[in-house]
Length: 142
Ligand SMILES: [Zn+2]
Image (cartoon, rainbow, N blue to C red; front, top):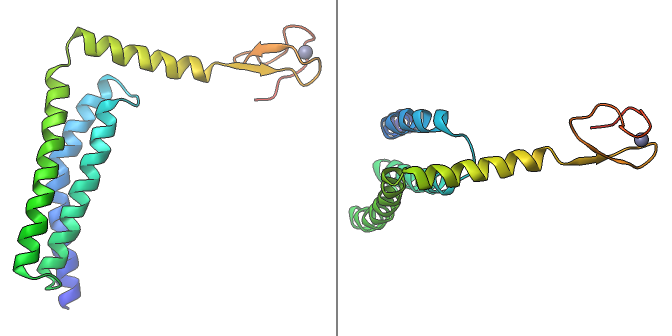
């Protein structure tokens, strides 16, 4: 019964922590979807928040002393504050320069995707968008 209670409590905390984050993430991600510094920070943030959640869970279940909890929690809070600050800096600097950098890395990802493929029949190089070899007309494997 105690275990169930802790589970519910843990879930509630998780929902409370994550709900505003997801909302924020959705708006930004709909703008530009790609791997950026911002994404890295989001992952870092998720890890830290996950750690805090685990810590709270263990504390509420009596596995941690008040002293340990306060000490570890303070460290985690500092870590989280740092990441939140970095995210904020990044978002407030969402000026033209940052947008251009994002666009450039998006283009890089795209061009990586549209690389060349070798014809299985004549070994000619074809863009992966080609379904048939431009040299010999053989069907290209993707
Ligand atoms: Zn060919």
